[in-house]
Picture 1 (cartoon, one colour):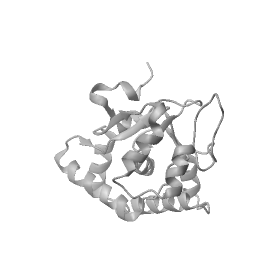
Picture 2 (tube, helix red, strand yellow):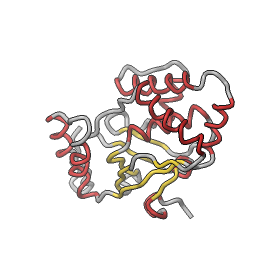
Picture 3 (cartoon, one colour):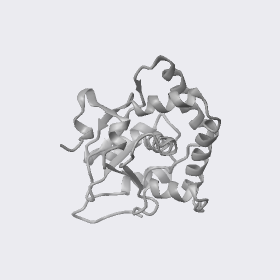
Picture 4 (cartoon, one colour):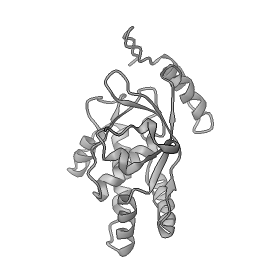
Length: 212
């Protein structure tokens, strides 16, 4: 039976379960691009370091998702920064067989994060701002784990043992743009242009209206 991220007990979705399934995520075009860098990455890794000592489960910030769109991809309404960072972390540490994919609609929607990471490892970094931050995150993770240690092994074992989980909020397809704006009120303020873009981007397959 296929893994259903929307029907897990207590709305929990474990990161290993998500990444080892052939789930396709889509980051809609109305969202701000990936912007995490060394500071945010190191904060996440430090938080994980603390919980690893206790060996307890760790609940990540909630992730808001909308059911599969017209091409079968799950839209990430809120939580793409952390989801992308965790994907890069698991890819770097190579502790599980990652089958999930993340696509970014504002970029080439046929290219997923794994392909971008392959290019980064080969030194072929694109000239767009998103890839700059993907590379910054990869370098921060690489620096964090550059010295082999028992601590690093404990970190890998913790991630592999499936103790990280999200609380999944299912967002109705008819309310994705409203939810996106409401959730971001308490975060970095959206510009007027971003608000307008989020309101007018549409996934209405019947009308085929998409704002590029």
